[in-house]
Image 1 (cartoon, rainbow, N blue to C red):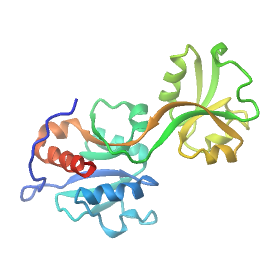
Image 2 (image 1 turned 45 degrees about the horizontal axis):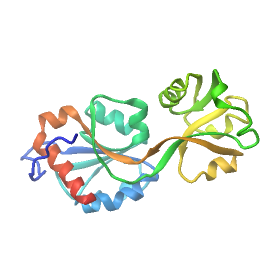
Image 3 (image 1 turned 90 degrees about the vertical axis):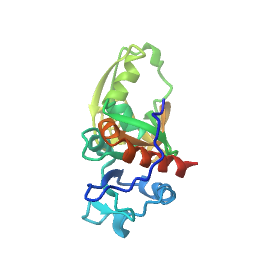
Image 4 (image 1 turned 60 degrees about the horizontal axis):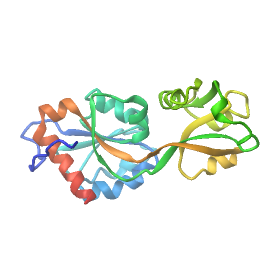
Length: 230
């Protein structure tokens, strides 16, 4: 259930440090642009430049700075209070399940899914309900482990951070659990999507301690993002 959001201006008091918004590098940045604009946030011009060595950017609002980090790191920055708010995929929240994070808004961007995929040549030739063990390559070891444990299957997780699609053909794993958007990478590597574990969108996330200690400032930013979605 959403916490009550105070209707106040998020401008900081004189001398107060700006709120830090952590955003993910990569494809989400382009989709996030219009949402930020509707929320009245215009980051510095090189904010979307992936070649820029800068990681922290001022915005048009002096009460807010943006930091650009890897998608999996957004949740870590917010959970530990280095950033008070962030934009994070639901896949990351499913994997880490940080109790320090409150996710009040689904931004409806970055739509994709966490799926199981296996070689097209062998897909459908065996009954998964008869499996007792399976080797799975994934950068989501907790999501994959829970998925198979719920089916009574012991999953041996091969934790990879990339190139998952190579794992079945090179004998590392029978299947992979990965993020899928169009499925073109799977097809190019001879894999097919056989099961969708969860549909994913990006969420506005908040550090719970920051919300308790700065309710007006954090609450006002949540309200601005909510208005941007409306």
